[in-house]
Image (cartoon, rainbow, N blue to C red; front, side, top):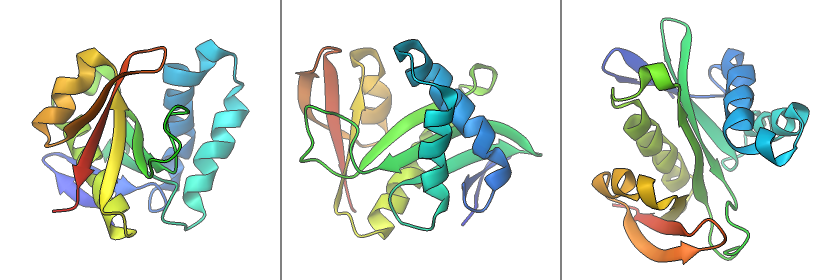
Length: 159
């Protein structure tokens, strides 16, 4: 279901599959290309979000047919914490569209999708310099300095 957020809209990727290629491209460039993964690996992972299952799923922000950003809900996002599930992950807003509330809207919509699928608690990991953004959205710190990137694990409870 789509929801308007100011002049942009946040939709489930299943409703706007024309953005699948953009989602895969941004996620690959941001997190996977530097690790040597091919783009088609990420395209396959993003395609899993289109199969109708509650998790994984992806949401996309768009405006007048233009891709703005994305976020996903996935079963696991941190090898060091396989017992935590589900996760909001791969939050991305194209640089030229940042500071418009798009990231916050994507995170809210992704978390809402996780709660609608039955989760009572949703997880997210963030670099220390990104932690404050999520805390302003109501996420609570669970752990700090996790893994080689010293990530913070945050949680959001169903309200």
